[in-house]
Length: 192
Image (tube, rainbow, N blue to C red; front, side, top):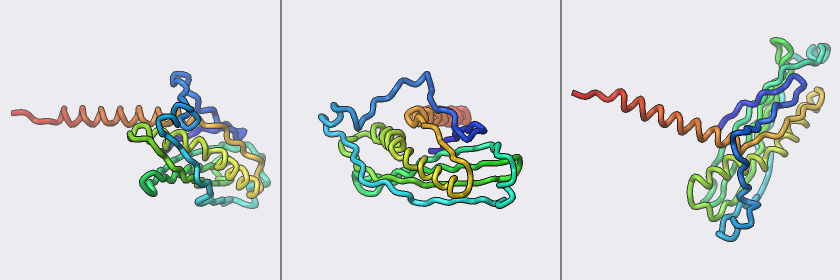
């Protein structure tokens, strides 16, 4: 899944809350979830890949710092074994001063999770698509902030992201696309 997060010129992202989407219960923290055998066990967090580009250095450091910041967020899930999953959260931050790129920072922060008792793909999808990325995000945010500062720029603080809302939005978008595809296929049928 890929999401675009808009950032304010100060380098702070706009919150991703959606007032129309009700708060989701945390399946791993729900005591009733363990009663029926559902568990999410974190096994490892790690930086899978990271990069920094400062294509216009050192001239970029002589200009007033009022960047336009664009933040891209993407998640990818890989099935490792029967119950073990790798979730990769990719965050790409591009700061521009006018038409020039000041910096481009990207981090692939990953986590390995063991999921037990989630028998439906809907439940498993919600945990892997929303809950797990929300656990990984603070580590990715720290990695991005560290890389930006090491590149010689002022601190960049990424605001929290509501992965539950983004996941539901993604599900709605997929359902709408499936409906549109089904409708288009039905309309193109030729009858004699």
